[in-house]
Image 1 (cartoon, rainbow, N blue to C red):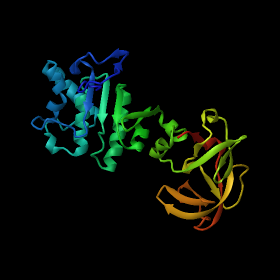
Image 2 (tube, helix red, strand yellow; image 1 turned 120 degrees about the vertical axis):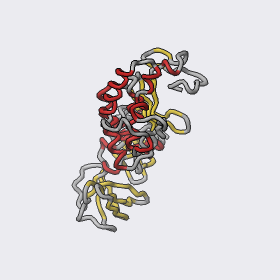
Image 3 (cartoon, rainbow, N blue to C red; image 1 turned 45 degrees about the vertical axis):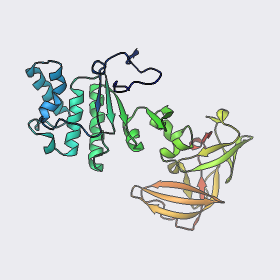
Length: 302
């Protein structure tokens, strides 16, 4: 719809405070990089990259100059004579990006551009996309199903479930103050406690929890509390002043950069993540103290 390939049933799409709907696709200043690259197989790399300028009637010398600039920008300066079939997936993606950017678009659309790449190439391409986006200062809409990718790349994330916009916020907000349980789970939230507000505390299945006032005025009487695994503190000794509970370690899983602990408090299991090698003094079946920092607890209606 942004490019003009489909027309919306209702509403409007604006760019620079002007409606795009009456503007023909080729005149919108919007370009798209597709998931499957869609390079012209019978053209070499230089011809692919310069195609948009050729269609606009730009003279060959100027096209050659711009193509060289674009290939240097995507760090592929010496492959202009190759055909797409001679390139790796990562190289093809860079060529597709160069082809899109050569016409200096107002808006760049990227449709899951990294999904066909292996993990190492995805990391490399993420860095390249961010570098180019900042250098050219082009507004970019990036479609992805990978929340890590969204967080690493985006200034703001539009979270869409079942065709409906759930939330539009910064990555930090999704982690620290999610709009609902589904949004929290999508960004790695696993700890949820049913709660009521009682005096100046939250009443939950593990006990009373103190809170700060950052969003309690908007909460219904029955709501959920959440706290991220990395924000929970655990210790064999009780050095905590508030929001601490006694529990038993039911599981310890080392995952490289983090160690995950499952801790059972009454009938509730909380997930805690500790950086590096974890806590060597804590073993499975140990009784530990769990601390939920006041400023890391978030309440949400569901």
